[in-house]
Image (cartoon, rainbow, N blue to C red; front, side, top):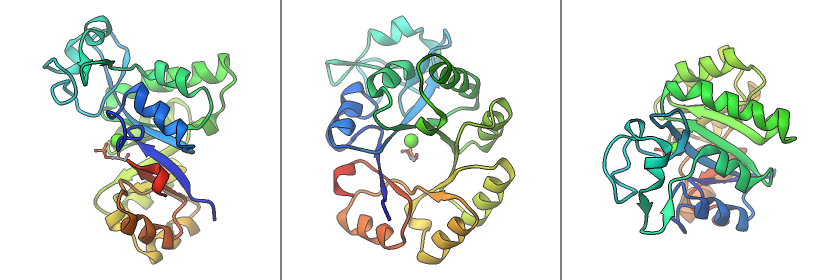
Amino acid sequence: MNILKIAHRGAKAYEPENTLQAFQKALDLHSDGIELDVHLSADGHIIVMHDETIDKMTNGKGDINTYTLAELKSFLIADEFQIPTLNEVFDLVNKKCFINVELKNADTSNNVVSLIEKYIAEKDWNYGHFIISSFDWNALKEVQNLNPNIPIGVLTEENIDTALAFAETIKAKAIHPDFQLLNKENVSKIQEKGFFVFPWTVNSEEDIQKVKSYQVNGIISDNPDKI
Ligand code: G3P
Ligand code: CA
């Protein structure tokens, strides 16, 4: 079985996470997909960053949702890179792999769904180019209500059975579990119910071999070249 290589926050092991450089590196490594995290700016742009503040990654401080896009662009990551927007990442990727958008807040659902619909309507993308995931299952319910065609991944770090039950109610495409929750039996159980299994964040050779032996459908990793 072909196991999909999904680059976590871009190829985070090689470039600063969630930057255009990290996503380009993921493409250079022939990743099948990239994973990224989103928040909204004060003026409603979709900002690609893991934390809700810019403190860890940039030379600035404060919450992303208190800055406009123009203000956010003035802060630098690793002294040289700008914080990307989601549409900048879409344009860079340009259908070369699929994009796993992780909603960090429920308030991003509407904007992300609209942007995906725009790329499908105007730029010849299709639903297979996207999967939206979140630990906030209300955000996923909202995505399903807004557009049931968008593939959904149910993130969990707690309980596979609860995630599986929820995935059935919203007709998700995949379960995205913390890889430490998995074993051969529960992977088969998830797949028998019709869902893909995309565990995160699997980085060491040993862990990658272990989840591969469970025959998961894809692996989210900082170093997708090792999969
Ligand atoms: O999407 C899987 C993984 O990215 C979830 O954890 O903290 O890296 O966003 P985190
Ligand atoms: Ca993430």
